Image 1 (cartoon, rainbow, N blue to C red):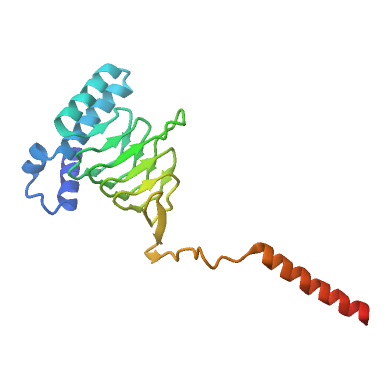
Image 2 (image 1 turned 90 degrees about the horizontal axis):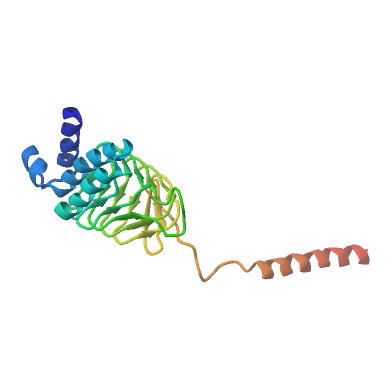
Length: 207
């Protein structure tokens, strides 16, 4: 228990340059408190004491402004920075070394049953105000920009922005945007191919 506690504190110190001491993180950081309380709530939930689990979860919302369903699965060294307005749904799964900023939602679309919330890979960063909605995977080391609305799978090592979110970088290389003006016309291409074929046949007939 103490080793996990030290690991969580160290993760906050590594990710937040404003953190001055372990004591400050332990007593004053709402993200740290929410994660520690969730681990207790999740233990009760897994042992079929769901009322107690939910009670801890709702108390945590009032104290920190962060709502994590007790059934959600959180990886190691998760950091929720600032944290106000963060919502993590019931079937969400978060990998190790993930960084989440304020106002992030890991939610469902309301159309699914069973697995309804996203699975976040290792080393992912989700910036403030981003919404990740649906039962898909966000690949390892992905970056989700502020205010992005993610509705489909995100490849590993990529950066997504916008509403709806689109990939703008992959493996550190900028993705060339589609030219919406000079898109090849498939009908015109097919007509050109047919005209060339007709010309070839006419030449054969004349010979």
